[in-house]
Image 1 (cartoon, rainbow, N blue to C red):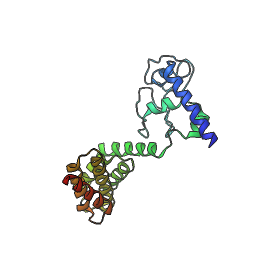
Image 2: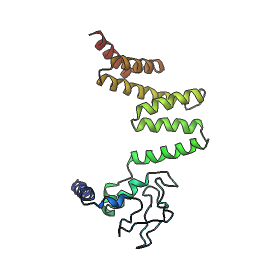
Image 3: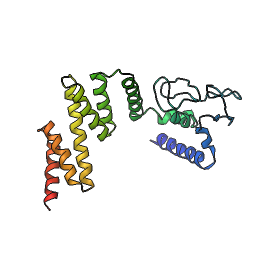
Image 4: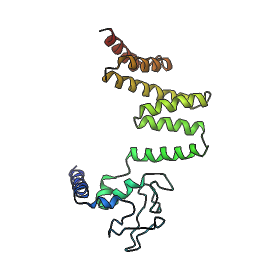
Length: 216
């Protein structure tokens, strides 16, 4: 616990120093984080002045040309990697920066997006996308992708999983609408959730509360 607290303190100090001292240039992709040399050849992977590797992905380890904003191997954001590489390696490893579940999910979502853009859409890929969007709590995106899945793959084996994810997303969208006093919108979300799964007690309870609010 003490080590984690110390790590957080160190990280805070580092981030504040980056922000306030002008070292934010470290995060600029064509400036060497070690010697601050301005690189003009965006095809390079190392600094010609000191030999520093500039654009290495901390997710998969691929060394990318300086011009890249996303990793050529895993599609992870390289801006995040450039910032994290300015943080002491021991602190980074202790806090496991860039290795959180959400970071890994974002990488996988990027890979799925690339495959879909290449015309490689399959029921397995589409259902995995819906599942991951739901895990990220991106309810609106998950709902939209679930609708698209049902239209493209109505008989797919993954339909049960996708429906379950959509019900959860609709329930959460309904709850958020209720928090904003948008009870008419909440009713629509929750009714749709119950049409998909009449046994979803959470959606049923929320719908009852929402309908009561409309009667006031």
